[in-house]
Image (cartoon, rainbow, N blue to C red; front, side, top):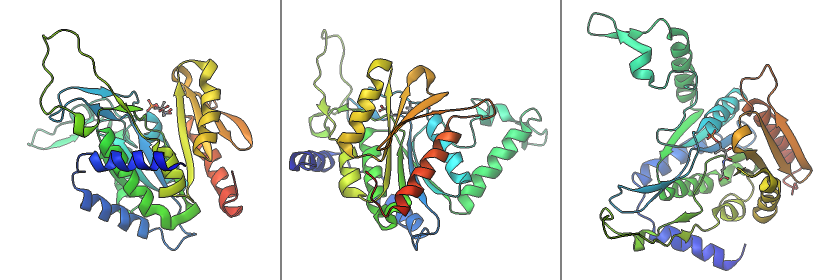
Length: 312
Ligand code: PAZ
């Protein structure tokens, strides 16, 4: 990567607002990574999920959003946990969470009912799914296999991703990055952002957005150069999807790029690796396409580890 890209990334972080609870996050990540040592025991994956927001005001009322329900990240977290991976789950606040996907939309209010004695109990209609969700989620937390780090803004997302990647360097090839979050390509730099709510009634508004520095490049080559890196490419125009995915793999040196189209993303994806393109589809017996996708990527990472890092 060239020096200008590294400089613009440095400038981004230098001008970003301070990350709330930074020390706590760093300590939790370092402890989580330490539990995976010595290398060769449990593998770790960092899964990003949901869409970043780009605030337009410092005291933010308005923001630009990126589409992602978080389903992919949540389903994949469940699959990696089942496969024995420790998972750092970086997700957008309010987007889908692992083990909750079969619960009704408003789980707390719908899944429970008053027990007539000032307490609550699961509504019998949802008792089985509630019990399963609570048991699996708490078991992953208690056994130290799941660390949940929520974000909202682009600034928080990139700060947290950098903290995790730098800490995970010690795990070398036994760490995977699975970057399913939809991350904004444009933003308003903090130092040129207005403090208060933008006022209306003054006619049309023009706003210039700066380009977000190419952090995938930094992640891959500087922050975690040995980790197995998987990025995602979403397009709505199928004619350009594969070209963009191939280009992303070349440009950022990703080990795999998962290409998906908006309408069909829950049924099939195409994974681009140095070996070519592989169609991954869910079959009639699989609940989610993430099951074959995660299995395929785990096998790819195993080859990467066994090849001693010589892969791309
Ligand atoms: O979160 P979700 O299940 O609704 O969708 C997943 C996805 C389409 C956001 C993800 O698979 C993806 O492609 N993420 C990267 C998007 C991009 O920046 O191109």
